[in-house]
Each structure stands twice: as structure tokens, then as C-alpha cells.
Image (tube, rainbow, N blue to C red; front, side):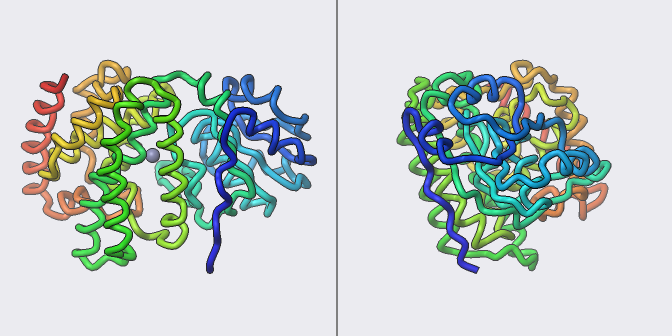
Length: 343
Ligand SMILES: [Zn+2]
């Protein structure tokens, strides 16, 4: 299947220009992004508030959007994943409107949903008809959120490591040398604009989103390849589940990248350097969590990781039983020490 992604409609006033042609559509959003976006588009048939990603919640939303031609996700990853799920379930068109650079949910064809504790990927959601990035909206998002989006690129630092582990373990993860190299090149290029991100320069935030758009093609052709998400995402999700929606996704990922790259023995200084220059928030106390919570989650991690259908370094700790547990505890202590010393 040669599915191609639309190019990103971006610039000042982009939303007004693109949305002028929309009719019979539903909006899926949350309060703050909707307050910003509303004035830039015609009235939707219905506005659905994204709440959580449990199958029960998502199924209950289906009836409200039945009969629309297009579902438009606006804002957070929660809104975008809800829009993706509904567009697939109701077989409608999909459009995604970015209001921050804080997550890359609009560029993947997987909507993450929950059945009880289990994280269920809803795959092959429709490729959006429109991807809209309006600079007027992006500039009004909290800078801290926009900076956090750099974690969605930096996570490839730990993900490439895990992807290789899975490949070597004989798991079918669509290993691809070309995709590994192009992802590595994006990690190197991140050094070029990390300073702009740290200076809250809009061009730096737009660059984050442009890289997300580049990765979209890889997510489509290599849906099993974990080139942009590995153990750091599994840890970030565990932190999010413990701490609730107040955690900014990219910040949970930033802390997780630091810890996991150290646990992997995979050049944590390199990751720390980007996080420092891009001024990304990562300290547990700034995220509203504490080290004892993080430690408890890491110690339960091999069990938690079995709920996510990915093979990472954590899977391997889990397989080694008591010995793996001891090793993980020792490595975590050193990783925590590393993160605490950063400034
Ligand atoms: Zn992410």
C-alpha cells in the first residue's frame, strides 16, 4: 500500500484558509485549544470533548459523530487519538489541527486505547486529509509545552537502541538500515536547532513539527519498526498512568530518555546535552512527581512492560527473573544519580 501523507498546511492564518472549505464536520478537542481555534473556523456540527482513551469512553462518543463527513482533532494528543479512533470506527475523513509542538500523535496511524490496564493499539487509522499548523495558535501555546515536543524526536536516541535489541532477539520489527540511518541523521540535526527551541523561538517549534511530519512516512511504511518509540515511551506511559493528566507527555518522555539511556549504557550525556540546550523540563519535582514514585514504577517496570506489545531492554530484564531485577535496581540507582547531578 502506498499511502501518502498530505503536506503540512502551515503559516500565519493557515487554519482559517484551510477550514474555509469544511462543512458537516465534528470537532474533537479539549477546553484550551478549542478556545484558541474556534474563531478560526466555521461552526462544526458537534464539538466532542476528549476525556480519556478507554474503549468504553471512545465507543460512547461514536453515536454523536455519526453521519459527519470529517472528524477534526484539535490540540492535545488525547484529542488527536480520540479523533483518530472515531474516524476509523465511523469511516469518516480525518483532519488534525496542531496547536502546540508538544506531541506527534497526529503523524502516526496508531491510536492508543485502553481496555482495563492493557494498552491496545488501534492501527491503520485513516491518513488525515489535512494537517494544519497555524503559527498564530502555536505562538499562544505555553512555551514549556512546545519545548517538551523536542522529546518526540530525542526519544529516537533510546528507541533505536531498543529497536536493535528487538531485531537481534528475532522479533519481527521491520529492521531497516536506511530508516535507522535517516533517524540517526535527524538526531544529529537536532543539535542545530535545540538552541532555538531553548530560546522559545517559533522557528525551533516549527522544526519539531516538520520532523514529526517527516517521520510520518516511516510510521506508515514501517508500522512495526520502533525507530521513534521504545523503553523511554513505555516508562513515560507508566509515569503518566500513575500521575494523571497533569503530566506533560514530552516532559515525562524527557525524564524517561535520561533514565533509560543511562540504563542502556547508551551515551546519556548526548541526550542530556540536548535537553539542557533546548531547556526541556525533566526533573521529577518540576513534573509534579517524586523520586520514590519514579523508583517504584521502574522496579515494577518489567511487569508493566508486558502490557505494551513492544520488545525493549525492559523485556530482557523481565526475562532474567531475579537476576534481571537486581541488575535493573543497580542500574536505576546510577541513572537516578546521573539525572540528579544534571543542571
Ligand atoms: Zn510520544
